[in-house]
Amino acid sequence: MKKAILMLLIASSFVSCTKEESLSSSSSTSCYKFTVKQTTTCTPYVEGVNSTVTSYTESCGLTSSGAQDVCDSMKSTTTSYSGGYTIKITTTCTYVKL
Image (cartoon, rainbow, N blue to C red):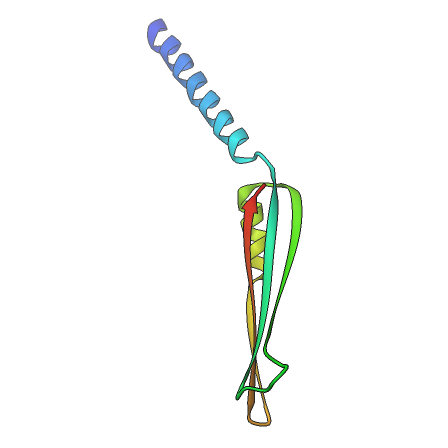
């Protein structure tokens, strides 16, 4: 009986150490560079309306999943219709770990 209890205590300490290690490695933070691209298109084509604007920003103190959340929150597509024209604005985001 004493051996069984001792083995349970040893096994539980290994499990708790493994959980702590995985928690600390998954919550490590880094710096990321985000590339946000906004594309505007008009159909039918109107000169001077179609464009692409690219911006860059860096942010530190983010986990990998936090960086993904930031990028996901910036992505969008909006379509408007007026006077026979269709205006579409698409925003995309990519990121790299610095």
